[in-house]
Length: 298
Image (cartoon, rainbow, N blue to C red; front, side, top):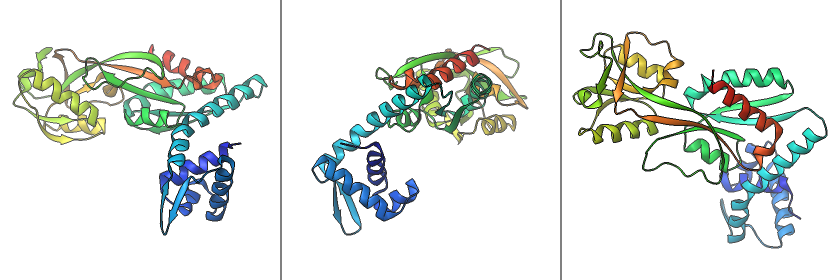
């Protein structure tokens, strides 16, 4: 019989490469990790690790078990949370991962409403951009991932294995310094910025910028790149270049010294909340998804 605690230990050993490092990650001793791994190998009846000096690697059976561990642990979490809700404990935990502009706009409103409605619910928040946030969800390291994808992007992720809760559609807008030659223009074609220095955002947004510019016949000269949206706005305001940012990102910043311009062609990104099918049945996860959807309409 395979125990969940043994699977968690196996995943930690596979991720860190040693018993001692896994022990530090799990908050236990190296002998305790070794003992639990022996118990797991005894349960499955075959070696899961090849130990050689300081190096440790998974056997074929170990690789298979690690591959299935995320789904198994997610299913167990869903079962535990649902049983607790049915038993009337009125408690639960939600691990949320969000990209930065979602963390500063949608998440605070949603979590404040969730706490008011369910004071016993505990929520943890970690920031990660997609596709990393989606990987964390599939690996069993979070319960909900706030993510986005650009319409028409050639490398858009496939989310068929996940529960997708659409939240809103976000438009990209142009930013130019207040004294820029186009600052008083309401709408421009992106090709009119072909000769400008650019400030680019997160890697995914950066890739989308390059694709849009290349479709307009030019490659943007990116002088600065930063994942920090306030830094993008600050650099534009200082006259160091132009940028395009999602409207949601601008909502969380007080733009100084910049002008917002509609850029053609219009580019949208779809903002969604993602979870695993098993986790979607957990009351606290479902309540969090509902509050995120409400926050997106305000």
